[in-house]
Image 1 (cartoon, rainbow, N blue to C red):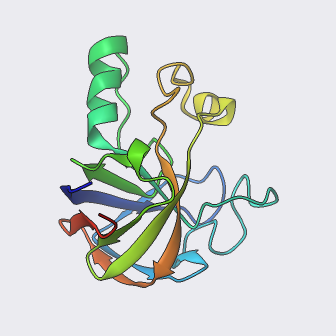
Image 2 (tube, rainbow, N blue to C red):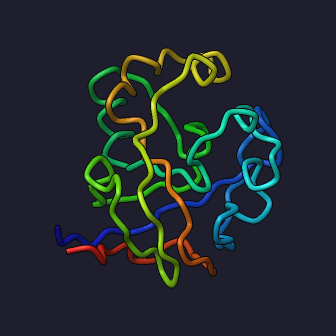
Length: 156
């Protein structure tokens, strides 16, 4: 599967429930997560539940569709995923490796929406996010990522 997308934004939070902070660049740590993020330090809302969530992605196309179809604006700082992408087929990347800048990620599982997000935002996003809530990934090769980096497949 050949694709070329773009990294639009990077967000982290120091603890679960804390407002997301936007970054222009970040360091991905292999097998750990994004430097400074709640899941890299074990301070996330779901940190006590084993899962693949070293880094989480959601696509801009989903955010546009939710606003168009449901009248709900979901900003990159609100959706609680670390990376917002454009032109990346996230739902097709489970089990596949891809590059963001100099790093390599592997799609672990599709993210599922949670009632916690709906409560935190006070927006009815649970149903609109069904089957398009993003992708949870492993970091295979860490390094720096920057907003604007290309995202490309390496498994084809």
